[in-house]
Length: 250
Ligand code: G3P
Ligand code: MG
Image 1 (tube, rainbow, N blue to C red):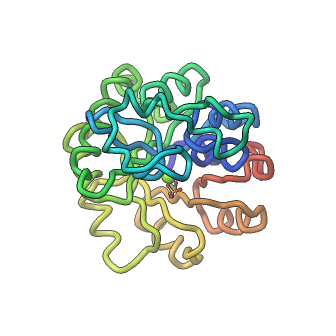
Image 2: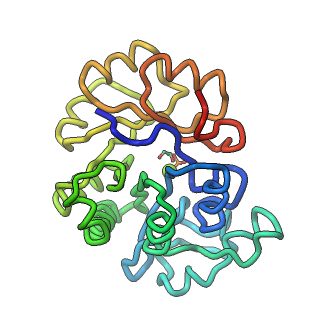
């Protein structure tokens, strides 16, 4: 069952601003998005930061792994210049900064737990515990439009999240819906399946809906494809094309 927004800006601002930055969130917000997906992993000191890659070099100048640096070092690093000179000075945000921005702007969050290899359990536990602490009031109010949804490709991270914060909703990310997905989702008491739309068929979408799960797709950047999968019962998706598939998309 899906009680959440339908259209999410992928990594904050899709492809119109540097991913997983406050500038990205501002861009998504300016395009009317009130729901967002972003990625979270741990710095060396165990503090969660918002970043997609577990290494530096693509969106952040430098070398090595995210877990080679403390959060204080990461938040001083430029995460905007790679995208364009106009974004120079945009830094790696702390998870708590992103949550605060979203809360201040009324943006619903799909928090993707993105553990670096070997950090699955710790990342799931830390992100879920912190999210629970930050959303105690909203959880008590039991308002799905205000409580974030945790998702991950890592069943280990999701299991740790379930243990640390059983009352936070979880979604299992699967590139493909292969045999056994229902057992995995059931064991994690997942509320939704998040899957790659490229491998989704109408029959698979039906399977997910028949099993009672919410169905979310990533990353849908084509309007015709968006209409097709919505017609199959897909509940929601994230997009990089926030200019093309806006919150009023129908
Ligand atoms: O959460 C859906 C989507 O973001 C998964 O892929 O690589 O963009 O994090 P990725
Ligand atoms: Mg993601």
